[in-house]
Length: 162
Image (cartoon, rainbow, N blue to C red; front, side, top):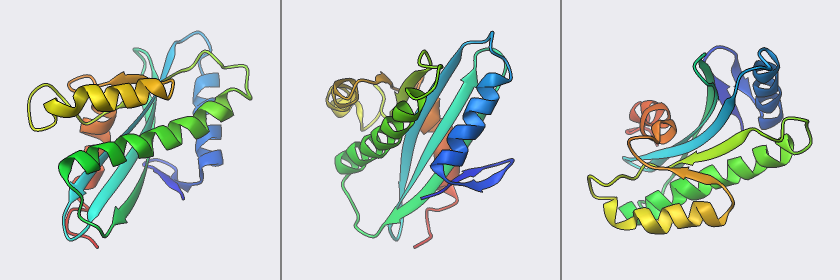
């Protein structure tokens, strides 16, 4: 599994985490949020993109993403729960790495591609509770831009791949 940094290219999760920590070290006075969000796009297969964003509050951000496809066509509910599961998986790995540093105050949020308007409104409570049960903060649309904007941007180009 590798991630892509738009400015630095391919990197594994360890290199990505190192890059995130270098960004944080660049301004120790700022507050940071680490956001993980996944979006999917059905096409010939279902393509998923997980985005990791490190946000320096009021002073910019860096992001990384990974793409992968699943040949099986899933229902909307299954896709939303898979998106949340993929985000939680990466958030857990990052949480473990953060706990080995002196930056334990970095808040990790899971950005979910669900909202009060649209077809996903009926499953918001279920998917948010899943994230909360795993110990992470959950964001839904319109605040879940990690999934609804960053990851979504990279799923659009994949819709007909696979």
